[in-house]
Amino acid sequence: MNSFVLDASVALAWFVDDPVPIYALQIMQFMEGGKKAMVPALWTLEMAKGFCIAERRGKLTVEQTDHGLRQLEIITFRNSDQP
Image 1 (spheres, rainbow, N blue to C red):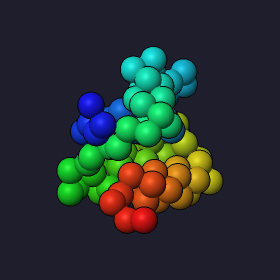
Image 2 (image 1 turned 120 degrees about the vertical axis):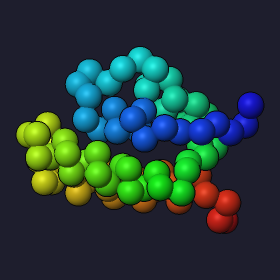
Image 3 (image 1 turned 60 degrees about the vertical axis):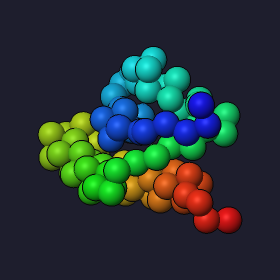
């Protein structure tokens, strides 16, 4: 298995949950090990909405949300088919 489908709830757990669930950490390790994550077309919007909700509920600060969105850009670029 060189690729897998990454659900937004798993990716949001990396930024919102404390502690991060073991399953989410394992998925992160898969990606660090070179596995490619495939995401649905609406994934980025799901993630942005999840960050907004977490911020509104007081789980994240504005700065944490900004940082998370920047990290998503890195994650999605690293996992794209672009060089």
